[in-house]
Length: 132
Image: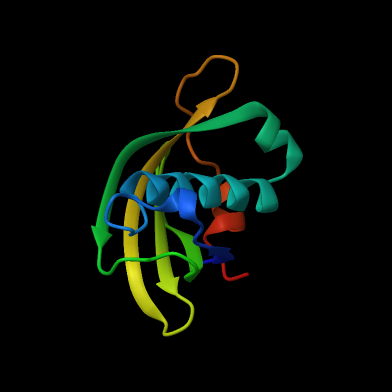
């Protein structure tokens, strides 16, 4: 599988009342890295003619991130079937490599004009399900 990574630093606006990263922020980061991965790897015609929507999120919180922590985010596509792609996102404390969060999200590929589901093509699978 092709893995996409990025690093972020926790800032004050990311925190909740317990001074941990807010759960809503993790979800935003999951969406952001998925979009960045898609835009970095997909051909322009696919980007212009399709849109992804979330069907489900399953998130496991392992440890809390705090102010100034540096987080290494990794994402990859686990599998696809029909119009559905299962994306994994893992977030690690970069200092000690501790897993903070692991999520599994089901995304559905839609035609950007009709908003009808589209089967994930072998072209898309070859881009995202191969080692890069």
